[in-house]
Every structure is written in structure tokens, then in C-alpha cells.
Image (tube, rainbow, N blue to C red; front, side, top):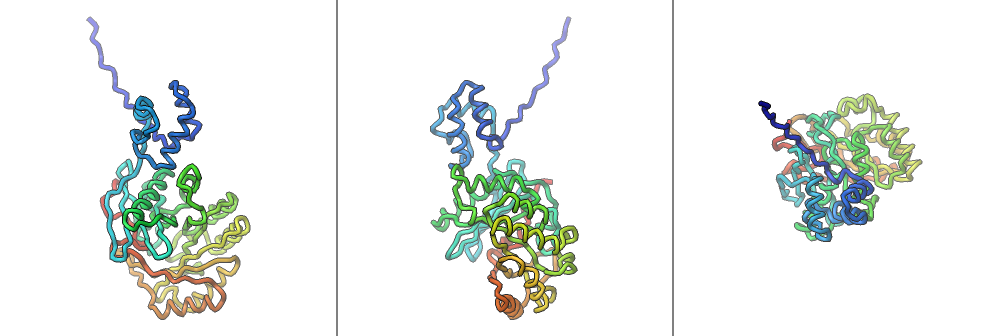
Length: 359
């Protein structure tokens, strides 16, 4: 007598449909006996209308929606926690499909409404003054997860302040240029007429300084803006606070930035936190001027936001004013930025996903 053995259950892992190109969706549809033109409608739902479920795609038949649901998923993010600062800044902890958390920030101002988005879960660069730098890098975000942050923060701007989103900065958790392909794809989705149709001139990507990738931005002739988190304009000091400088020296960065400007014609923004008794002297300002004078640029002087992991202190107000005046007298465009969202750990350098992370 033969004994039947139970057949193993095969677990079917559905693919995230947003990882498919338009042509891939069309190929799938035609293989299922569906009309190919439906692919464009689906793509519009995904990237223009920001659908997170197939049942939202109301111009598709119910059988087609069920077919998509049977074969694919949409791994959208969700708002796990939202905090509103006394200055109206909103910080969100976004839960990803695999339960990791990243943070994003809505920064309202009189003349703009800015979304600050993350590009990685954690960070590998270990900058000594940044809370994210004390986290491990778990993984890169994919393009759709970055896009979702923009959509969520845009919705918050409209819901809370009845104002459309005007600007996007890739200044949240992670180093964008170490997630190059996904960051570039996310910007394509955000700026495309078939996506959110935002101007690339309203987008700034901030880097701690990866010279070869800055050159790649130039080769790709990007239209968005570039910011370099500089914070010290001599190698000895920068090595102390930003270990990435040991392999991407100021000389290498200067060469890369000159190349970037030559290829794109876009002026660079330098972000400079002024730390008390570290990089706040007139000599430091002089070194900064010497570094920045090779291409058109502007300098954002940023207030330091203390974190538990480090002992740095913000420079005194008169020192910051003198620092800025020295640069302005040399003809440098200078903006002194005040912190936003400090009371909810939403300010520059404070994003660390303090809620529970998945190991």
C-alpha cells in the first residue's frame, strides 16, 4: 500500500509592481490576455496619482485589479508616528514594508514648504556630530520608498497648512550618493510629467563628500542642486569630525566640484556647522573662503543641534556673525540658518529613528 506524502507548500513571493518598467507591465498584461494600453493607466496610478492599493485604480476592471493583486504588491510606506514642533515643523517616522523605520521632516517657512527625506535606513559614514552617524546602515531605500516620503510630506503640507510642497532636500538619514541609482530614479519619478512633475531646480541632494560620485553627477548632467556638508575646510579638522574625508580629501572634493560645475553650470551650496572653539575662528572662515572660491557657490551657516552621543556645542552668536561677515566681505553669498524642529529631534543632524528598529 502506497502512502501519499504531502506536497510541500510553495510560498509565492509577490513582486513589488513599482520595480517594473512600463514595458514589463505591458508584457505581463498581454501574456494574461489583457490589452497593453492598460499598462500606461497602471503606471499613472502608481506614479502620478500615488496609488497604494490596486482597488484604488478605478478605471480598471475589477477582474484586472484582482489579477494585479494576485501577482503583485505595492510596498508603500506608512506614517508610524508624527510629531509637530512648536515652530510648526512636522517630523514623521515612516514604517517600511519590512518594519524598518526612517524619518522625514516637513519644514514650513513663509516663502517655501520643504520636505526633508531619507535615502538609507541608518548610515555608514559615522560623522561624529550627527545622530544618524551613530546608527548602523541597515539597507538602502528603493526609489519608491523615497518617492513615498515626498508624497506623505506633501499631503501633510496640504492638510496642516493648506500650502503645496515647493522644495525637497535629500538631507535626512543616509548618504544619498551611496544609494545613487535609487536616488536618481526617485528624482526621475518626482520630476517626470508622468510622476509628480516637480521642477528639479526645487530639489537639493546633500552629500558628505564622495568625490567620484560627485563627478558622476556631472557626467549625468543632473538638473537638481548639490549641497556639500563641509563643516571644516582643512583636512586635519575635517578628518576628526567626518572620517569620510580620509578617503575623500578636500583636494579631491575641490576637483570633483569644479568638474561638476563645468558639466552642469549649477552652483554648489556648502553646508557649514559652526562648532564652538573648533571651526569658528576667522582663520577657519579664511580657509572656507579659499576652498569655495573656485566655483560660484553659496554658504549656509548652520546652527548646531546637540545630540546625546556627542559633546559638540554651537558657536556663540557673535562668533557666527563675525564668521559670516568675513565671507560676505569676500563676496560670498551667505545664509545663516536657524534650527527648525529642535524640540522634537527633527533638526539637522538629529534624525536617528529613536523608535524601535528591526535588527
